[in-house]
Image 1 (cartoon, rainbow, N blue to C red):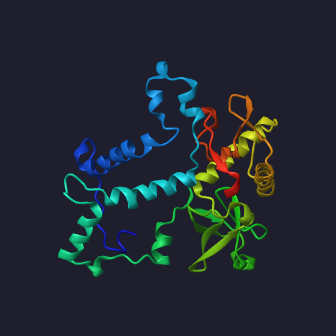
Image 2 (cartoon, one colour):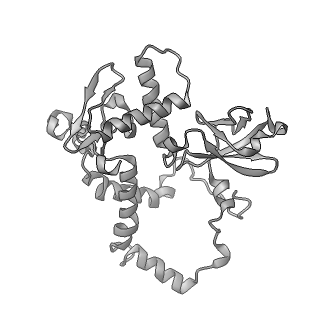
Image 3 (cartoon, rainbow, N blue to C red):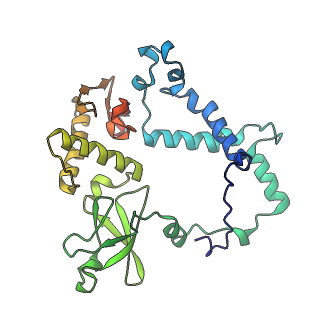
Length: 282
């Protein structure tokens, strides 16, 4: 991709931290001004002897991955971007606009945000390839994907390069007969709009539940997994309580006001972290 767009790659030298001072300063500012101000932040856990149950972050985690991503984008592009920067004497947005006015936009250096660019930036699997089966298509990240061109006997049994959309696990892409084809997941309705990170958390929770029922070897079964997601969603929308098992073999039922707990957004259940999603926005 870098060669195609004539980009020179520069790597940060090991042991020379000042090369990353700009981005590290941005990380520090974001942590101080945003993360440490959010409900459920882990500042109290730095002094565990002084931490009580009321301020324990494990009992105050209310941010889902989707909501946190939206709030982080709002802070970056609407708040931080318009605050006066002490080193610039003006806001970053004003400095950018001034630079564009003085030096020009340099259209010849812009990279078009086209489908070709998106395909080059989409990640692939560990092996980078998948085998085409006549009955179920290709398997990517534990999901089966299908395209009408896979009906052709000429492609059966072939191993082709694959990529997937990290922000929508409902689609994947297979390079068949010289072109990238968009393949649709068998359980599209259940996984459409779910990010790669969210899907990995869902798989982890589902596998753990299967092990709780005595299954030592757990393989991904799309219909059963879809039923698992649908049953939990119906329970939440109906206002019922759901029992979730943790890695320490204990279970708990959570209900907070008009919200039901949605464990798929937790980083690890063993940390006893709980996320909340409004029923109205389910």
